Length: 302
Image (cartoon, rainbow, N blue to C red; front, side, top):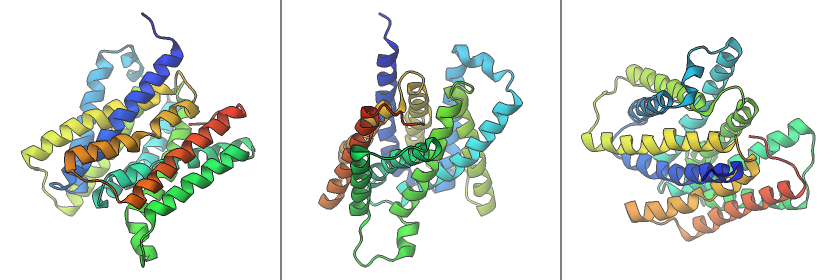
């Protein structure tokens, strides 16, 4: 039975949500054995392999034979944005006491995507949207609160890195939505992996770190890279082809709930009570924001 386009979109969004939740768990497990650049080299090299294997079996293969100059410029621009966004994302997980914390803060991306859309379209916020933004930022503040913490510790810690991450991911998401008809999801996923692999390799050589990692870390990274850079990217970009981003965002905003469950099962840890409260506020804020956007027939650009 052939699925309706809307159901396909929801299925891809759910796939991205579940697969994306495992990224926090597998990457945090790997960081106990490898450094950030070592992780990047193996994580994204495997992601390229998985994506190319998928592409060779799909109808999208022919799009790799000749890439127009304009598409190359777009891919280069998006690759540079990904370096900052994804680099700060994994750095935040590596320094986090619990990987569920950055997953809660990741919901800030939806707020920044909306702000970009509002700015470009010269629209204004309305009641539910304002409430959603306020609730999400309140949740992020609650999660990030540390008594006696300094500005420098904030900027170099999980919260500061996730602020950088979500800002640049919002830019990435907006660009992806704009050019999704020109550049297919697999091209975007492979382009992302190539840029990040190259950057990780350069850092590894400059710092003189070993290219050899423990076998257990290798298999952890293999599993995570299949679900992360491969399945999550395909799911996210493909969902945008069938449903508007506001619908996909509501589903994907629940990623942190899957992360909390996964972290508890894998590490036996739970966030602090106030962090869970803050995290639920961010999820609720995103839902309010998306409902408000749909209520006024405004599509969130991604």
